[in-house]
Amino acid sequence: MASTRSALRASFHASYAEGAAAELFGACAGGAVLTAWALHLGASPFTIGLLGALPLAAQVLQLPGAWLTQSFGPKPVAIAAIGASRLLWLPMVVLPFTEVSAGTALRIFIGVVALAAVFGVIGNNAWAAWMGDLVPSAIRGRFFSRRTMYISMAGTVASLGAAIALDGLSPRGWKGPTLGGLAAVACLAGVLSLYLLRRQHDPAPALPRERSDWRVLIAVVRAPHARPFLWYLLGWNGAVAVSAGFFSLHMLTNLRTGFAIAALYGIGAALVRIVSAPLWGRAVDRVGARPVLILCSFGIAAVPAIWLLVTPDFLWPLALEAALAGALWAGHGIAAMDLTVHLSPRAERPFYLAVFAAASGLGFAIASVAAGLLASALPERFTLLGETWTNLHVLFLISALARLVAAVPALRIEEPGAHDVRTFVRKTFDVAAAALVPRRLTA
Image 1 (cartoon, helix red, strand yellow):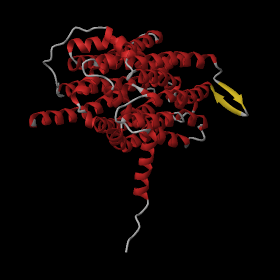
Image 2: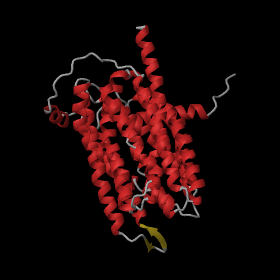
Image 3: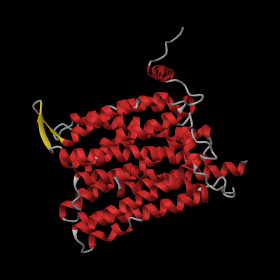
């Protein structure tokens, strides 16, 4: 028992560190840096939207990922696929220094992003199944909340460093070499994450692997406890995808913030995630993931609407948006991950995870393509009600309304033992009031 606890503790610490390394990779190869690569290589807004959507759109490949996880085991598949997804960025290290045409360079870039997304999907399926076996259900919310804290802190530092490098060196004509250097840092972070993944415990390394029965996929779709969550994921990710790939583009091109301000916005949201994640983790463990997911989903619906208020001369609403998004997305991520594992029986967990992720990716992919087409069809700027708007403002408004509608199916999700939303909100206000209002002095 003592040795098991020691192995778990060591694995948890390695997982937190691996999450930080993964966030360093993401800061140097995703987000605003991905947009910077696309702009540097001459990609259109439609292409940029598709690139941002690829990681989630590729979730439809979770089904073959589940077969690999079931056949070879979660840990080996996670290490191989996650490692491949991160080391695939090696060609981007040398791309700025090669003499290839702009079109060829853009195609290489798209190919790297697409292949990395495919391997990332396979790796994430295996990793989620692995963590579902490794982390006891009683502390799963706290585990994911602490991991969120570590990756948020790492992402804050890494994003700021990448932004300073791009803002400082790009005006000097070194944008290409700077992007290549960031790709090199991303690959080094990928190597470190491989080492940390290998150090984590495999709770069932010697279990015999049964032959996969694909009929279980039909059973997952028909399962009464899984179907409401499945429909929620499909609609919710579609609503989010309408705007998700365009926030960085809007900041850099329409708001003209530069990479440093964009990084500061990300840092603000990350700091809020760091502070709020432990609170959400304890809430999920005590009252259940369902009420947290519902509350955060309805709250997140307001996030894209705030972007309608922001102009190059009126940037302060971004601070409000960063605080709101940071807090609510932290709770949403922890609750969604907990529900994903909780609703997946251990024996068929890879297939449940695959179907959940495939529904998410399908909704995200369809909506991303539609959003990109709509953005390309609309004029870049137009006047309405005496104000100047952009095509991306239309996407933000549609996304806000769609998120509000997509949050409704979360009310039908069932989680045994979870509190209802009203009880959760009432208890939250009671705790807040007790902390803020001083107790009466008694004689």
